Image (cartoon, rainbow, N blue to C red):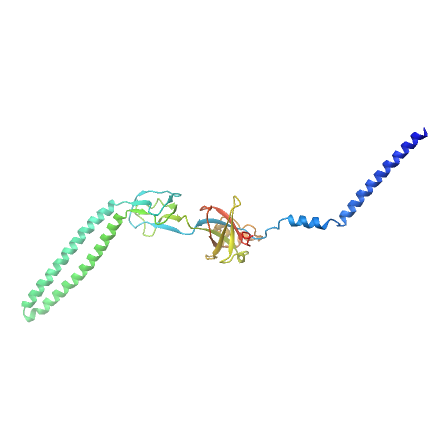
Length: 318
């Protein structure tokens, strides 16, 4: 019986000792960690693995053609047929539209008739001058002055006829050239940006814009800065252009900064966005200024694509 009690007592002592040791270990561990005695090498290793936050501002931008060609209709010339629509790709020499030549043909015929009449009248003036000179030579001295006056009047009429003939010849040359080039062809490779179909009746003034072709092989990025972060963008600096949909990047150089009058963000931000990363709480009322970035290699970019721009700190070289 005593042996049984001894075994139970020994077991209780062992259990109490183990519990005390566990409690001591937990208290010691918490105190050690709170005192900051963590392995410094492990902490440094963890810090090295954490990426440093990128504090550079991101500027919203949009890809646009660097060059474009605007086609203006000839005053009074109606359009008979349009061969392209907005969004169509065209090559240099492709037909864009045709002028209506029916009215031009009528103008050509009338101008040819007017020119022939003026040329006949000019010949008649020369004949009249020659006859007056013959009569003057035979007339008495008292009538010489009268003949000289008539000859002078005919010479002035001849000069006026010469001017009118030159004007008619130039007008006829323009009409013939318009008929010959009634089909307007593209001067560049690009994309049709706009077609103003309302200007097809021949009532337009010279210089009215009818069609715009954007050059597809020369792209740039148009973006904007506001008054608070304008100092971060300077002409000649290298920037990185980032796609908004994937990890693609391009490199470019800022060519212009603030070349236009400032305005409100809502009206003048070319990308339609506020500058990302800006910490200015009043940016909605600050003026914005456009800047432009020439792209070294625009492969993979599309006209109208939205991107963002950050300063290049040499990531590509690393």
